[in-house]
Image 1 (tube, rainbow, N blue to C red):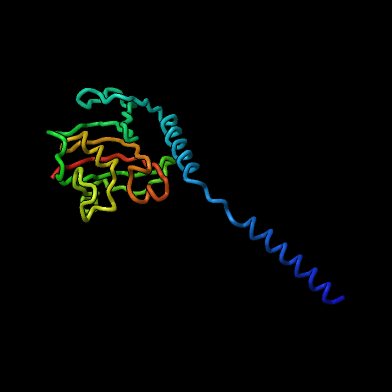
Image 2: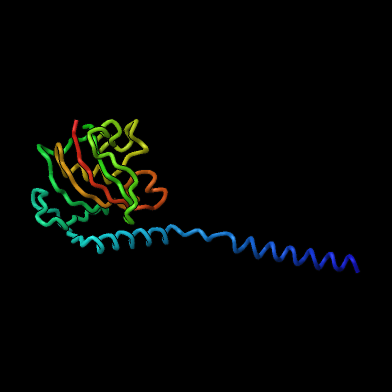
Length: 184
């Protein structure tokens, strides 16, 4: 009788353990679900901020409406406030970008906009995707945005995860940036 009671108790203990272990594990989202959520976050941000998406870059990159954002083929949304002076950078030129970074839900990630932040601003070689010491911190979105501007250009950009920094690629997080460029 004692053996039978022990077997029943063991069975119930095992069943309780299985129930708790199966309900305590969170289901991981699939990549397609995360991408769908990213697309929805971008759409919500566009709607909430009254952004007008345009599909043709304005002549001479001069945006006349402050809510117009050009959607490039790569998925970058860009509004250029000031195209800067001179020509856009050439391949291999060093670009220094001061920026304000936030998630689309408004969480500030970092701000490197002031002159004091110049030593920690983002630097990369234009159109060189694997140049040390910049790789793997390369952002195709920043590279593309810099290509529309000259020295002292300024823009607002929405960068989907796949053309952002490594951390955005890993977390499928789109971000908003206010950027200012220098070409060296």
